[in-house]
Length: 157
Image (cartoon, rainbow, N blue to C red):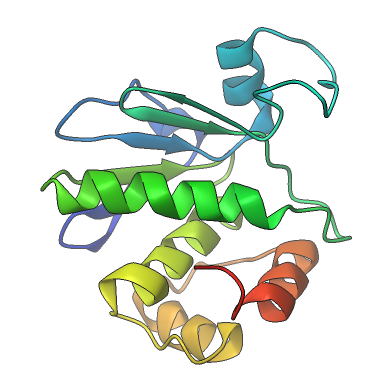
């Protein structure tokens, strides 16, 4: 687990834990977290009410993978920001983890730092990414998430 900001942490699958009031957790991985939380194997029909996101108290489970083609939905990122803002504004710290802690979790942290905390430029994904790489030099975003964030940056609020 890496501390990025005063109350913001990025982790990998081995940092996965249940969220608490003081440390809510964003589980940015389909497997195993979203699958276990929702209770399915393989794929989930996109008509399922928890297809993209499941929130349980201090845990947010995202059905998010890291493909080279941007298959992401803006709603996933907006739901993440809403959860993160609420928890962070209440005074809690926040742990965001994915499987390897290199692409999805840091991309969400970057988004939060730019869109909510104001610690990174909000002018574009590219500007935010350049500044974020100084905070988190091991940032290795997948091609798909880079394309998605670059294309949808202004629309994600």
